[in-house]
Amino acid sequence: MTADELMEEALRQVAAVWQVEAGQIVQSESSFDWTPGSHTVRVSASKHDDGRARVRLWIETDFLRDIPIQNDSFCGVLGALAPFETSTYSLVYPPNDIWKEYRGREPAKLSLFSSAYISEQSASWLPRFAAQMAIMQPINAEIRSTPMSEILGGGTPAYAKGEKATIYNAILEIAADIDARGSAPSRWGGSEEFTTCATEYGRSDQCFGNGDPSGLTLETPFGSNSALIRLRTDRAHPQLKNGLLITVQIPFWSTPAEVTNEAAFLNFWEARSWTDFPQFGCWHLYLTGNDKAGLAHTSFVPNALYLDNLVFNLALWSVARAQWVRRERWPDLRDLTMAKILDARLGG
Image 1: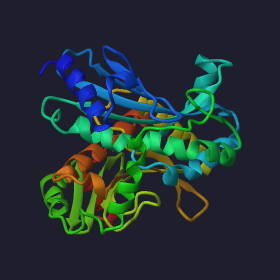
Image 2: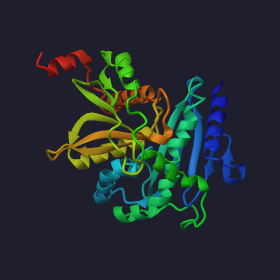
Image 3: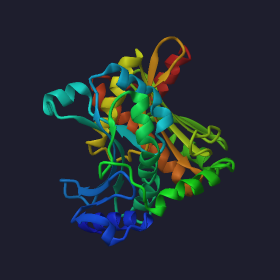
Image 4: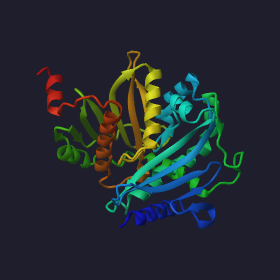
């Protein structure tokens, strides 16, 4: 398939999953806008300028307008809520210093954002999976934009027509089905994929790990330390209940304010960069218990979206994300091999 064919197929699959009819969207050659309720969703596909048949598919939902990104309290509360408010997408807003330089006095906005990278090998399933993950964007925008603006103490709901819709597309009710399937134990529990993935990919200089029927742990070099990647079946999501939790922890610890700023930058930058790994989930801070905050990325796949062999993709995407952050934000670090990192940790 050519890049143009991949773009067309990706957009077709998204529209098919959401059961979008032609008359319900505003369409261009490589994108369409859809307003299933109160908030507009933008879907776009673009090809890389290297000429290879690869396509970036991104999905973004308007959430809040006029957010006070210069307000430390607003950003701090949003950062603290991020692990609980997101699931299958990222909270994206511009860091204040970047916004001041490039947009001046123009009001900033907060969006819900997802992306995926489509090749001929993944064209049969990844656009569909991305659409299924991203449908939580307009669902949660409908539910949460008004209370979130009140909790954050700033911003206004980004209603497409200026006020909350009274009629919305029935696809937004799919959350009830996801919730019902989430009441059962994780469908990944007992999977052999965790052990197989650790055996195949977790025995190298760039990745070390272990797996068992309950999950997978991987480490990849981050200077003389390592980034920690975990796939877990024993942690329920507060909204989606049971499924598969994926976390990436970066060895960066600082004050909550500094980590919140770094997480906001990474969400913003990842949404605007060609990374070759999907943006399902969100960068955020986590508290370490000693008055410091750590930097992590969390995503969650609910039971309703179970796929065979998905563990391998999620694990490799997570390793790629950790390595991307190291290159982008700490380019001067010299990565040791995992063997040397583990040897030093054990006192060797």
